[in-house]
Length: 155
Ligand SMILES: CC(C)(COP(=O)(O)OP(=O)(O)OC[C@H]1O[C@@H](n2cnc3c(N)ncnc32)[C@H](O)[C@@H]1OP(=O)(O)O)[C@@H](O)C(=O)NCCC(=O)NCCS
Image (cartoon, rainbow, N blue to C red; front, top):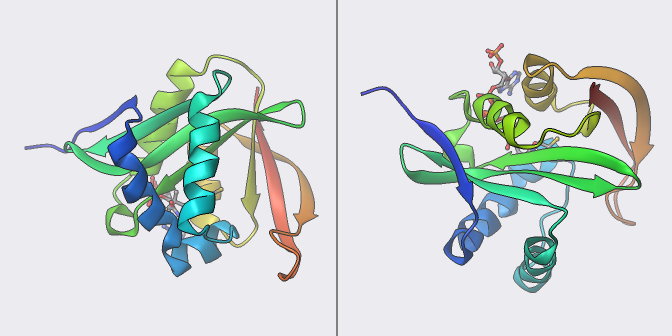
């Protein structure tokens, strides 16, 4: 049987799975995004799930919850992001999920921020047609060093 990757609306039961995904230290380092504690995580998701301007989808891999993909507005730019559970890495899931999201999120241009060291994520974006347009630095939290990032766009 071939693998199937599909997107569906997020349900409440997905959130504890996404919580575990973002707790993974390797994933957090890759994304240069500090893991959130449970309360902060749940408050953040309650906010984005109530926001009609956010397109948020659960990624299913052969029916199992493998991660999430989203588009949202940040400082006037429409952005995409995604997070895959580590046990599902390297199976083409992020690339296929972003491709599917781009069929549902029809606004252009779209933007993405990716830490320079996150080679896999940059590759996902470039496979979907995004190109690097600029570089920047940002501080994920006050106790962390600045992270160098690429900003990509899809026109
Ligand atoms: C980055 C991430 C989304 C990649 O997800 P994935 O489903 O494993 O990605 P894919 O399988 O679609 O692979 C995409 C490409 O990256 C390549 N790749 C995967 N892991 C890699 C690695 N560690 N180093 C270099 N390339 C890598 C794959 O070979 C593939 O390229 P190819 O098709 O030319 O062979 C996933 O690791 C993740 O969720 N990480 C934590 C959160 C994160 O970084 N989110 C993105 C924030 S910008």
